[in-house]
Image (cartoon, rainbow, N blue to C red; front, side, top):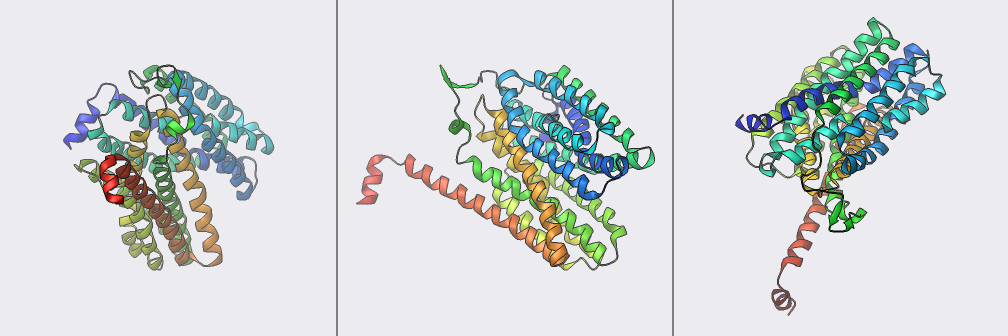
Amino acid sequence: MDGYRKVLTRPGITPLMMLGTLSKIAIVAIPVVLNLGVVLGLGLGFGAAGMVIAAYAVGVGVGGPVQGRMMDKYGARPVLLVCAAAQVLFWGFGPVMPYGMLVVGAAGCGLLNLPGFSLLRLRLAVAIPEEQRHTAFALDAMTSNISYMAGPALGVVVATTVSSDASMRGLGLVIALTGVGLAVLNPQVRDAKGTATGGPGRRLKFRDWFTPALLPVLAATTATTLATAGYESAIVGGLRHSGQVEWAGLVLTVCGLCSLFGALIYGTLKRSPGFAVITGLVGLTTIIGGFATHDWRLLALAMVLPAALCSPAFAATGSAASELAPAGARGVVMGCYSTALTLGNSIGAPLSGAVQDEKGPVWAFAVVGLTSATLSVLALLGQSRLARRRAAEDQPPQVMANASA
């Protein structure tokens, strides 16, 4: 655990982790609060709620790189204050908005969502030396796990025991307060010598930061969230199909605890496996769950491996993305990373649900797992091809001439 101590004792990291975790708890509650706001507050169906959540997800996907670029140029504080103000407006007026305006507002909410996840990763990328970075990103994955376990549950409790209006306004208040707190802390997200240029007098161009090496990282990131969102949906669907849906919450809790434990172990490793290998294993082990849907105890046991691997996969891809981000473009690269996370979440659950409707939960686990594993294999092949190209470029001209002769 000495690695975690070294990370947390760095100046400003502990308060940032605490505020960042609180902001994450609020952010991950947004979809369920929007859902209940439409269903309970407006009296509409889940299909209408899905449109609002989809608009929010599109906003998040577009806003991640844009916010990252703004942080590269102006630092964290201005972005945090603008986002906090936008969240106050949306969540303050959200309960009285008509449905059409709520859809548009949700897209704006996503576009100006508080960058709690990306801000923490950016700060870790700048402040933590490369040899400790996988430990730092494992710690980030653990805080994300805690957020996913607490945030949606709290949103449901407030919406169902108080009111959907209270849950929306309360959520907005928490997001705004954490945003202001982070702005006061003003974490340095730019390298001390980093600017928005790639050298004297030259601004970074798109190809300077969106390199071929980044594509496998983004593919593996999407693969991981596709698998996790997909198997969560398949767990609920599978237990409902077998008449044991009342145990779904417990099985998902087991998954969350296994994921937390997996991140804890991963952070203590001296050397981490390649990110594409870990994400591929997440996909392949997800398939096992399809053979255990008839008994919630067997399903919980079957999900131990994929759940325990998902946080290390997030930590590995996050660390890899940060290493590829050049000074002056860390924000936009990590913003693209956040978009890849959102893309996987947006694909995984609908894909799992569609397969369940057509073929049943067993096939949902299989399709989600194989799709995730296929993306990971493509990422691994892309990595290998780039490594071979770099090795060929590094060879001296005489060696290459002898080889061709």
